[in-house]
Amino acid sequence: MQGTERDPKLEAGAADLILVLDSYHHFDYPEEMLAHLARALRPGGRLAIVEYYKRRGAMSGEDPDRALKHIRLDADDMVKEVEAAGFRLAWRRDHVPGSQYIAVFGKK
Image (cartoon, rainbow, N blue to C red; front, side, top):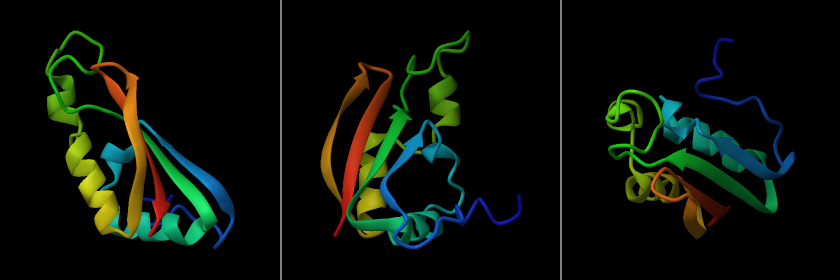
């Protein structure tokens, strides 16, 4: 579908919670996508991102370096990128220790 890599086509104020599950690393245009996600959140809404760490062995499979090749940013850099887009980190923790984390944001 054309345009979905920049715009998830969500109505303004339509969501209390937006879950980005194992897909943030596919955001080719993160600033634009995050702006649309922020617009779609209701006041007090949250953005939750579950993502793999960018480190050796984080993703299962035969190639232990798969996450190093496939994941765009590690957790700290992802948080910085999302915060720069107008969000504030509420909390972050391991989802699957050593493999995945979850970060929850509110709008600034």
